[in-house]
Length: 208
Image 1: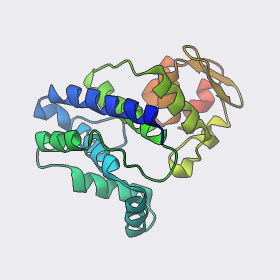
Image 2 (image 1 turned 45 degrees about the horizontal axis):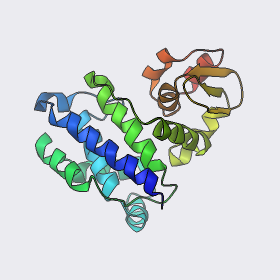
Image 3 (image 1 turned 180 degrees about the vertical axis):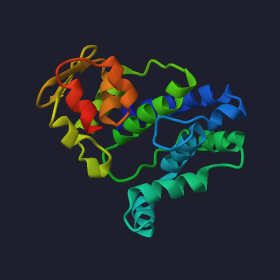
Image 4 (image 1 turned 135 degrees about the horizontal axis):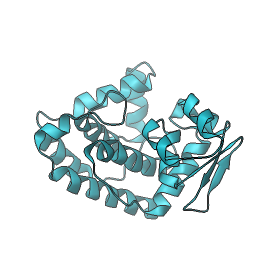
């Protein structure tokens, strides 16, 4: 089931735990790059996602009346501890799990890289992710419909070309830049647009 993917996922979880261990409690309340969620909320979401099985995903989605946003919000509410340290301990407990919702296992890479940046960038933290993780995440997002959290429709409006990896996808005016900002941009993180150039950037910016 993709042992190579899981080894990367586990390493990324461990690296994020190391970063979170050094934060004071106030910084956990800072806004993340992920919608209205705080850093603490994103960490709780990662706990919830790591615990999710294929069957559990279907059951919880049905309970949320097939609303992905409601399902995610309930997961955050369920897994967010009374304190940052409680949530961090829950993250430690799930760090080596291999359970996953339905779908490609590479979605676990997307989650760790994108949500890792959702937390790190607002806090001024940096990480050099494995190039394979970023490229595989970019390719999966580019072919996954928006209904399932991807960017297939978005990528149909611009051609993405990574300047630091052998990957190019999409149709339309070109958007160039490192693979990580490309991944973040098509995942709806507008801060990444400053690291991209090309005639398709305006088209991409207008769509996210």
